[in-house]
Length: 138
Image (cartoon, rainbow, N blue to C red):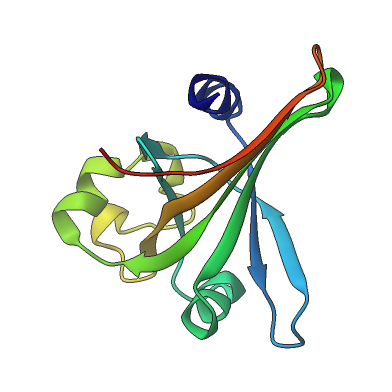
């Protein structure tokens, strides 16, 4: 079941990151998946973005990886933190972002979001297979 979950995640380049806004409602937006390390996913964003203030107010998030053409999706439920670590920012930097962050990985408005998955669920449309489980680091 975990293998199917990670297969779905790895096939989707633009998942939706859902935070909770100031009114208490989910706020979804597409993001570029920068990296995945087991149950941790990474995104890049602007320090001044709304998602940062929402994460700082409530770090519980959902990352939705959806393939609507196949009626397949996976949800990663976890906690998010804002990361401003210069070596890691340099490692995950992509040159195509320079338009947004002219100073490159040293740009003060460029930060990373680390989502540590705690739970997962998926629906696999081809087989109607569905599972929900706790993600445990091993």
